[in-house]
Length: 269
Image (cartoon, helix red, strand yellow):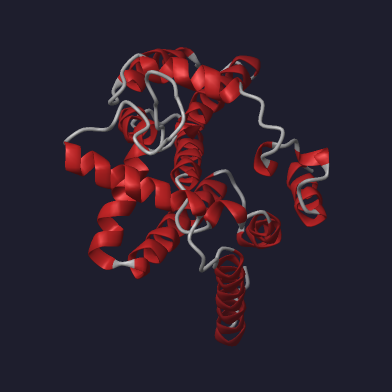
């Protein structure tokens, strides 16, 4: 067996470092919006009212028109986090929060890919496609970022399960408790668990523990300020038509930029 010379090893390390830096710079550039998301101001106002009154408002105190008897804000936890950071560290803190969450997403994604068998070359080829899709959701600091982290963590857990490790299950349940109070996108977790269960059945792998986990995690959803009103709100909100909101439009509706459609197609391929 031949060994690589020190010069070749050093050159390879330099190339790897250069690729990593290039991808990190590309990712940072794609998510470097300096204008706060418009929803952030409502979140800060909601958090201020929550801390002032000692509880999350069950009515929309900012509306001048009639609203539903009970108004659920699925981003209340993210609002409190943003308020504490903004009042403590200012705008720089909000930007730091965005980059910290982005770093967590990238780290979890790369680690999961490596555990799934991807080498550095495969990650270097696939990463730019994903990075091209990373922009709108990263404006400072959208609660959707918590769902991105939750999805990355769930995929990491399922990859561990595929390797026969079960220690991830309690950690995932704790993650879901926080996730459900940070952003309503936590419902994706149940979709991922269901898809993984179907795959496990087809591959004839153990699946009962995944179904048990999903059943045990379902009651966690009501551990929030609104209790049982939260699930019913989610059913209504997810099915609500939003024809005038571009980010809820189908990908092929013509609203999304062509680059996003191409990048998404490449990712699926």
